[in-house]
Image (cartoon, rainbow, N blue to C red; front, side, top):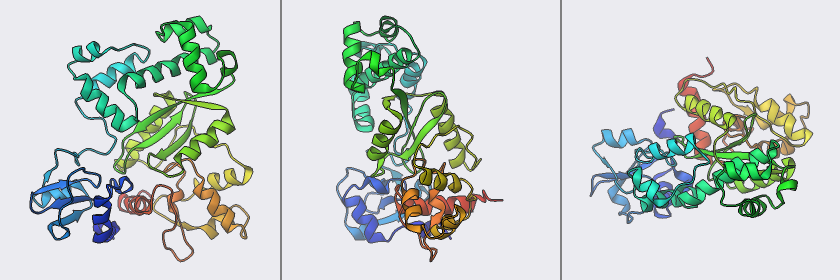
Length: 354
């Protein structure tokens, strides 16, 4: 199968561009013959006439055909990736996550505060300063969880006052600091990939979720974890989430198909049996739902097995994309069938199974 074979039909891709459909991010780029520019599916540019466009699976193919990258939607950058101009600033944030920043601090770093704010609002749904405050709250909450006095935790996170910290924590966790100690703080990190941003949630010991940012069930998955683990989520990086981010990068580079980061997948006994068995499906191969049901000793439970597959919270890591219908056709995938096609073809091309 050639890379072009995984593309939807032209009408579907054109409509995706017209509708600015983010679920098609990473699947194709569109070249406009009248301008010589190529764009990502969500580009805000006005729609060209259908007869004036052609589609490519990768930016490199569009470049080879003589097109130039659009300056508005920047198709050469993976959606969700951190632009080069912002990386030095975020490196400083990672080095000192409890530091308070002002607009002047951002200017002193050589950046326009408005530009930074716009990027964070587009990528995270909050301003840069709100993002920093949420990260500081997460750091302080972790300290309280580990037994630090509230006064010490608030001071370490540079909150103006203990009352301000307690109020912020109460709004985020729904509980007072003393009761919040019973909750599990998980940090959520956004990881860029060729198929769009991936959300990774974890603490220093393990990762609890790896999901594409636009999966329809993502909010439900967070809610499920919140209830099962008594968890509360904050933006930021943990040791386990960063290890997972590095392994995902190695996977997409074609260097590995093995994920060593500890993962925890709380669920029913049936769900856990299905998810554990999914880990044994070799890369580069596919199983049917029936095969999966047989493997867990429940050959008549194909429907409930399929439901458990759909409830998997670990995209790529627990490889539910390797499960197909009884006739070999691709069926439901939370991240979108186009991603399922891409992942299967990618693994076959990279010959991971050898």
